[in-house]
Figure 1: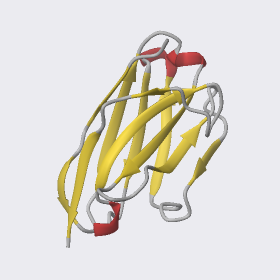
Figure 2 (figure 1 turned 90 degrees about the vertical axis):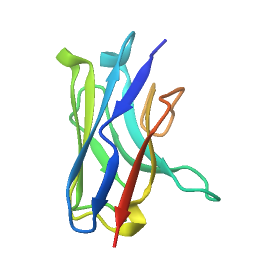
Figure 3 (figure 1 turned 45 degrees about the horizontal axis):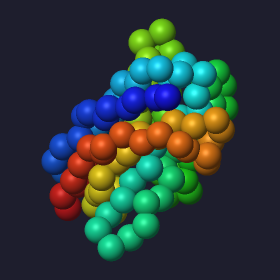
Figure 4 (figure 1 turned 60 degrees about the horizontal axis):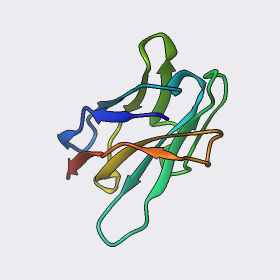
Length: 117
């Protein structure tokens, strides 16, 4: 079991930076983790993922070069550093955990990011 809680969302202007955090419990240090986002009327989409060791990461094409995913297993925390934000980055961002990137079994409740133009 893994429990997850996101924080750090907010309203920012285009071009700004924002860092999201996800604090977990249970098997968090041994789980692959990911960030997903969803906007009304659209399916939830993967943004970034990281393996349990933190060695391997992958990103959606739309955020490559702007977002960085990282984790600190000693603090049971995952981060998403978001730079050069665009209005199309607006959405509810969810933290997820599972046995491997792309195979997520546990989800947080989400944090809203709004990027104004």
